[in-house]
Length: 399
Ligand SMILES: NC(=O)c1ccc[n+]([C@@H]2O[C@H](COP(=O)([O-])OP(=O)(O)OC[C@H]3O[C@@H](n4cnc5c(N)ncnc54)[C@H](O)[C@@H]3O)[C@@H](O)[C@H]2O)c1
Image 1 (cartoon, protein in one colour):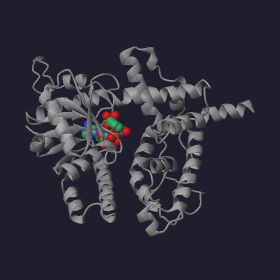
Image 2 (tube, helix red, strand yellow; image 1 turned 180 degrees about the horizontal axis):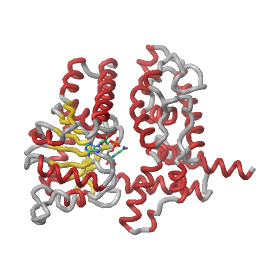
Image 3 (cartoon, rainbow, N blue to C red; image 1 turned 90 degrees about the horizontal axis):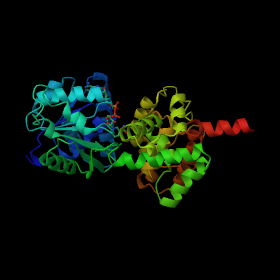
Image 4 (cartoon, rainbow, N blue to C red; image 1 turned 90 degrees about the vertical axis):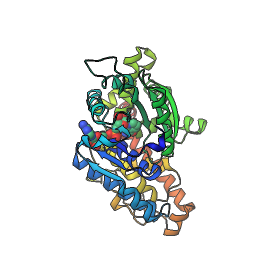
């Protein structure tokens, strides 16, 4: 079965990744999507977010109203997993919990058509382990479902990030790999392939880099500004490793380092002690404390921030996706309260100097200076209260 024969996509989990995957598939691959979530509230929230993204695309003349309406009509929400019985390709995006994923895959093996690809969006769990959950207990050599299990590891935010990591388990067939590669391309993404090894490629490379940066902070090799600045200015990455760690979420960074360490047994993956302590402390950025609805746990905080990225990028005249992402991440923005003439999203930083025409062109020098000033201030404050809080506290104690 070729990619263009995928007539219906199924997505399990309508959180930040699942919703993004469903929307991009509805827009780019133009397939109907059965969007399953066990929580009606998550479905409602996800679809509300999809509406906002589509409205924004229309208002910016990136797509027509008809295209937006067509894409939206392709999203078919349900709380009943049995509705996946007609999906040709299913992508699971529920939380990173092994038992939850294996329970879903054992159900999918029974519900989905016998040709359907069963993909997971896992960040770190072994695809081979997930595939094994589809094998009938009374017939362990029956790989008819396991051979169709694969990982399509989309990156966050899905509408923005082009790369998708394709990871095959021990049981995955070549035809499954080929079909997954084709479908991901049909979604407008650029796939790369990795083996089923802890961290796969993206996190195997990225996380030790971030962890090493935190160890450098922990052991005094460099201060927080120097660590981020040398990597930003010396290797041309858009944000330094410490800032990126805050953006991803320290809990996520720690979880992935633990997978790398536990599953390889290699001491080179030992998570930084400071990273563990920061997660134990549960600190969070405080810049947006004026925002009364700011969530307190890291997971909800990230979810809220990702939801805001697109809105804020519009409002402040986006010059750099990373810049506005960071701005959003650290401000606790209420997207409905942000306006180009108000400073709601960045308390105490003054009025955003912009007119509608500046916003459209994105070329206002005043605006660039403003955003740059805000970012450096926000970043400084956020990281004071987040990753670098300990360094600051130690500095204060020394005084
Ligand atoms: N967030 C990221 O940056 C990121 C990046 C790449 C990969 N991933 C991976 O993607 C997956 C999903 O992450 P997320 O950030 O979207 O999580 P999320 O918490 O935002 O969303 C998960 C959704 O799954 C739903 N859910 C929970 N149990 C369910 C069930 N039994 N049946 C149906 N729905 C159920 C929840 O209601 C929620 O809406 C994880 O495996 C994660 O590791 C996340």
